[in-house]
Image 1 (cartoon, one colour):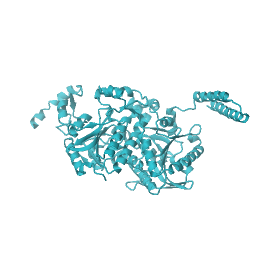
Image 2 (image 1 turned 45 degrees about the vertical axis):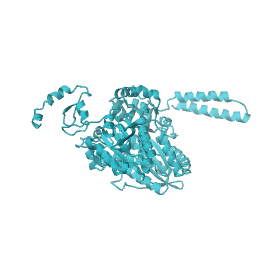
Image 3 (image 1 turned 90 degrees about the horizontal axis):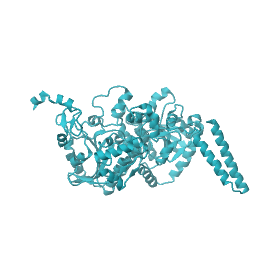
Image 4 (image 1 turned 60 degrees about the vertical axis):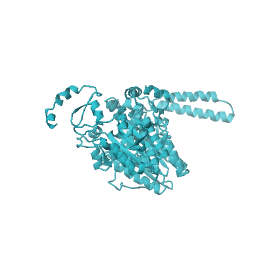
Length: 324
Length: 282
């Protein structure tokens, strides 16, 4: 991996030099530059530092990976956590509160995995109950009232499948968030940092700008779940990960994700500070852009974004084939 | 009648009938009585021994609920593709279209219920367990939008295993799409009645099915977010009797009323009447 990386860096440097030289001397070197570029592309493709979907799943779940709290601390100041859904309890699998992004107050909300095993148990491994989603909605409505932009961080294996969660209406809590988030009149920026596990992730992920970390994944079901339903064999998860098209690139193609945030070589757990800087920069670009819009524009744009997602055909031929 | 029942001829019968194709006979999962399919359909697919409500195919639902000759289907031609080239999905769709004569897992349109016109969505449990992919999400969304434009009330019958795995992220986002459409619809002061039928789980429960102004459910329907098997695996203990059944949801405050199938049409008509046809704006 290291060797190819070096080779690539060397090539890129050479390309830059050539470009500068061509500009300075006012000569045409486009042919040479083009062939060098092609070579660099080839190396990129052939070298193995492009993780497979399954490797990305494992990276996204890596225990060393920074959590929502880490990102908030890196990007914001004065984070003030607010607790509870006012109905039942405080779900520690979701955190939320107010913070300053530069000088601007923002509401930050996200799934919270534990930083240690003990913490993870308290956080239920980032798998929320209905009260977590209801707390999130309460804080979002509060943001709406005080005209604060919202940043949400997505990192959950999924909503918790348990007795209490069902008794207290997991489905209703998620559904309500989806409906209400579509109508909040303030910008919502969504960052998928790790695992985007199905409805439990989506319930915080309806927004105006959705970004995804390079090694994050986001799908309707976990690869293991998919493999055990489809092939009755959870060990085929690797194959399922490929089929589910769950990488940032796949999601960008699907129109679900707007920006892919590049991670430091080997994953953001190896250099969380760089990742924090990139994230901060991204937020400082995105939020002012969205704040320029009137709430009507914002809601119109949010609806258009959601409305177009999906793939279908209305060709008569297709219909004929089935109606016969 | 009670005397005859004691002889229990059916016990021998059940064993033999076990392998008879589904379209000839069905065994009641609650009381084990074997019904001839033709008779069962005449009884609205409700067991007359114990009151168990069988899963109801979409066309039969349509016939039971909508005034004869009033239904006009919309977006019938919307057809699923296989955007992710998911193993086996294309063939499965093809096979089901042929087998069911349906294009997808929901029928949408406009029709009258007891004289009141409403937008109608009827999910088809016979088509891939009523799972929601792009087309189901899109058809429901277009229906909601059309109701909003026409200022008509909306009734959706849910029956679904949840979001359709084979379309991964596209399926997942249909939850957001249908819910957002409902928000816009609701803002116009219009009425949405959600009828949850057996089974309604996963991404459909966690989107439009739970968002009715009024949520009705048929008796005994399985309704939940996570499937019972997944929960059992997660918590490692047996689930309590009646868990995730309609009655359980009523007890926990998530549905308004449980309505028997034979009374459903009347009840819907009444609810529409109580909203003055449901067409009045805010």
